[in-house]
Length: 194
Image 1 (cartoon, rainbow, N blue to C red):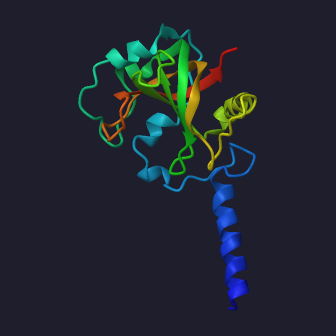
Image 2 (image 1 turned 45 degrees about the horizontal axis):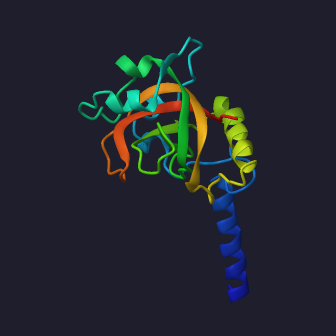
């Protein structure tokens, strides 16, 4: 194969990888790099939000939940994880699409202070969350921010958001400061506040 043929093949393969991970315009068009069987507690994460009245909490509430031992790799939801929660106002500090599982990851804090302790919120790739993924992507674009497989990161100015989601106890893995809890809201829907 000529060097031009190899370059064309490499470009085509790169385009497929980028497109499969949300690199295109559709934030819902993403194929996880890790199969579900290799994702931590995947069956517990990929569930619809229940039709129930959520309990009002704050990021501070989440930071105070006891963390306890790590759930096992395939543990089902239990206890607090069966409850629906709503955060009326928090501040979006960071965002991104995780190519391993195609979930949208957000870090939120109680205040807009860049050093405030943070919690994680995730919106899965599942079809029932596609509309909310499009909405947040559009809302962020109105602030000049891009969210896809190649864009995201720390926000220079945190944005006020509200969150609706189920509690999820993730495993205790290295998280950079200022993350202060292994509790997340996952699955969750996040929207910008006016």
